[in-house]
Structure formats: C-alpha cells, structure tokens
Length: 501
Image 1 (cartoon, one colour):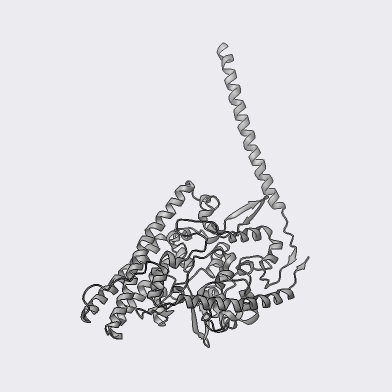
Image 2: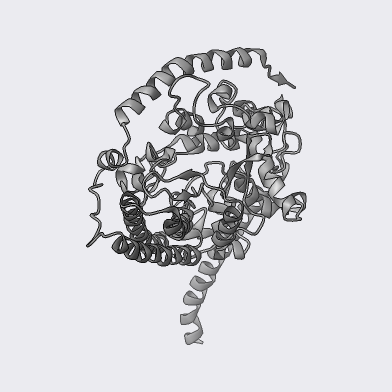
C-alpha cells in the first residue's frame, strides 16, 4: 500500500506530460486544418480583364499580386555561388580562352553571365553582339533574336504572323519588344493554365510525331521552360530566306543526334577565323541535358526546384522568383532531400568541380587545335588535307559548348555531361594528332607556340578584334536608337487601356 502511494506522484507527472504533448499536437492539427480551410475559402476575384494578348506584366499583377511580387524579385542580383550566380559577370574576362574558341563569332566580342528574367530586355540592349555598325536597320542580328526575351513576342507573332515576326533586323522591332519575360510567355490569360506560346517547340514535337497538347500538367512545368532553354538554330530555307527559329530535334536530343542533324544539312553557325572550321554554336541546351538526369527520370520538373510552391497568408501559390535552388534550399532541395543544407551545397559543388576540371582541359585542347590548324593553313595545307581535321574540331567544340552552355548541366545531369566532355577530349586529341602529322609533312618541326591569352584584351587582340572601335559603334548605335524606341513604345502604351471589373 505504501509502495503504491510512493509511485502515484510519478504516474501523475507522466500522465500530465502526455496530456501536454497531446494538447500541443492537437493544437498543431487545428492550426493546419484552419490554414487549409482558409485556402479553401479563398475566392479568386479578378480586378481587371486580361486580354488574350496582354503583354504587360503589371496588368496581370493586379489579379495575381503574389505571383507578380515574387516574380519581380528576379531583379535581385545579390546571390553568389561558387560558380557565378545571378550577377552580371564578364565571362570572357573570367575565361579568355572563350575569345579564341569563338573567333569570328559575336560571342568573342562580349559574353556576360545571364541575370534574372527581369533584365532580359536591358541586357540584350547592352550587349555588343546586337550592335549595328552603320545604322539602326543594318545590325547583324535578326529580329528572331527577340524570340525568348519578352511576352511582347507572342503578341507580335499573333499580330504579324510567325514568319513575319522573324523577318528583318533585330533593331527594327525593338520599340515593340519592351516588357521583360513574364506572364503571357507561359500562361493562358483566360484559364491561367500553362501554355506553349513559342511555335518552335510545337513544331519540333510535330516533326517527331508527337502532340504537345497531350502533355500533362507536370510535364508542362518543364515544357514552358523548354520554349527557350534549349538548343536552336535559324533556318533560312523554310520561309524565303527568313531566319526561322528551329529546334534540331528530328533525330533526337542527344549531343550526337543533334550533331548528325546539323552535319547532314551541312549547317554551320560561322566559320572560325583561325582554323577555318565550320563551327556549331550551342545555344543553351538546358532542357535536353536536364531530361537525361536523375531528377527528370523521377518526375521532377524545372518548376519544382526553380519555382517551388509557397504559402502566404494561408494561400498556396507557385513562387515566381525564378532562381537557383541553392538560394532557396529549404523550399526546393529539402522538400525531398533530408540532408543538411551545407551537405547539399557540398554535393553540388563537388559535381561542378569535377565537370569543370575536364571542361577546362577540353578548352585548352581546342585552343591548341585552332592555333595549330591556322599554322597548317599558313604553311600551305589544302582543303582535302584539312577536311577531316576541321570536322574533328567542329565536333569536339560542339561537345564542349553543349556542356558549357547547358545552364546547370553539371548538376542536372553530371553523368551525361561528363560523358559528353570526355568524348570531346578524345576527338580534340585525335584532331591534334592528325595536325601533328600534317605539320610534319609541311616541314614544321616542334610545337606550335600557345598564344598569350591570359586576359580578355590579349585574347581579343590575338584574334584581330578592334574593341575600341566596336565599343564606340555600339555606344553611338544605342545613343541614336534607344530614344526612338522609348518614344514609339510610349505612344503604343498610351493607346492601351486597363479594363477594371
């Protein structure tokens, strides 16, 4: 009897603690139910009528303030990772070898790390690749270059027709393309469902015998990104010389399949000024590389990591602050992965380190191959002797560019990216072995000296660029053209109305 009385205080304490825990858990449950109930009670009340071709993001923002507010956080350029981030970085200064690899192509003049979608229009205005040497309608870039920069593009395609939009120079449509990447690019203005607005993706599906309208919602959460984050080229044989935008997916989307597509049609983006090789410039095959990785294989979409779901005031929505998952680990990576943030970042950097180590080696081999090929030409090599060598250089650099331009490829698909770079190294070495034999036959003894390209300025001087002249021409071009664009854009803006309910 005494023993029972002695135990009762402990039993009571245990019962009390259990009761506290149960009450706490019930409180959490009640809070969760209340939050879900609040979400169910939320009623979408549109403030304005959004027309079918409304390209102004701020108008959409009146109906979707959470998405709109989060989207404009892409203006923040403060994030830094081990390799770049979202700030404007002069990539030619970081890696001057790029200047030599792109000799004869616009990227050798200027190439900057891309910023957020908010800066899409501003950045294309201020890049040397879009400069005009003599006047506003004589610029080297076609209007097709606007395709992925603005929701004004689907509006103009609807008004003018697709081929007509692609026609003409880049500068001729600048006053019409003024809104940065936004709502109309990816959404139907009536249903708000995800929508493909760029014909190149639809046409690529059709040529493969597939119907993109059958894509699931989860697939669309990647396909709307695939409208732009892909490899593409301008085909002038489709509409009477118009540079029509095409995805080279007819044979498939691997590096070898797209290479075979280009080789069959004997397509080249440019001829290298040193080696005279017919070159391919990979654009940004992020989607193609992503689809070969483990995340895509397991059903993860681009938006799951770059635009994860978020809750504010009991309302769940997709965060439109499109950014690196490394700047939002809790809402992106840790939804599935239970490791600490430090470990997840370490894993990413380790993959990047290993890929970039081999990518840099391939860059060096390619620079040497271009320089050695120039030496062979200088010594009197003929087309027949150089043909196989130039094909190897073309194929090796295509693999390098495919890996380098794929935006996150070393994380999205490190196995495939590593394989592509490895095959590029093999092909580049084979081209140099052939060059060594040819140079010996032409009477050259010893190594061809590697150029001093330790800075961007030295590399640009080596390939023959007069940067002072180019920069001056670009400044004059913008000084004359931008005020005209702004005036015309304002005239159109003044004619547009916002219709409130």
